[in-house]
Image 1: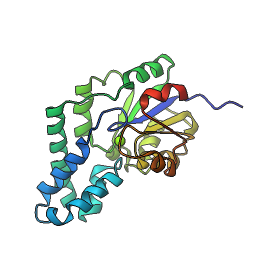
Image 2: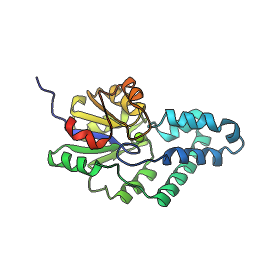
Image 3: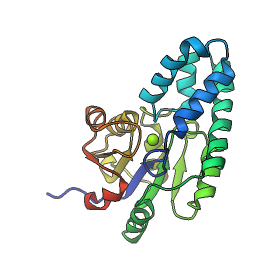
Image 4: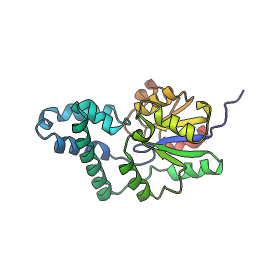
Length: 224
Ligand SMILES: [Mg+2]
């Protein structure tokens, strides 16, 4: 029996469909330094490594884990978003090569295109506007809109509900981090694709549950 046809592909944003080039990590550093100037010299290296290891998770959740309370986390998240948007404004934002082609490939086949992220809506929307993607995708969802961020499956459940998709096997999950893969496993997806264009390496993605690992989104059409 052949595998059921995919109806929706849920793509991560930074490192998967959008070039990151270290922008997210740089914004984390600015946020820590700005919001926790006393602790930064001592904790900076540990915090930065934690931010790299947990890439793909909800940013506010990562700040809460590190700083211990929600108020400090909110302040750090505001600083993070400011720093990230400043860097985007300075350096520009660009799709990872092959993204527009795969969007067109899916469109032609009637497969829905959705984005999931660890960013909040106030960061994601200006990015989508800047990229000119608002008309190219069918949906996007952020952690707070779905409930919890990755590695929880909430954003994927949200999308499945939105598109009235009953079986997780009909959803392909694509991302660059362990958290992306873990959310796909928790959701019950059987097509969980890791890409090597972002934060984590092949072994990390496989260990987290990737069913395939490809160099980048440019290689995705062979899997659909
Ligand atoms: Mg990512």
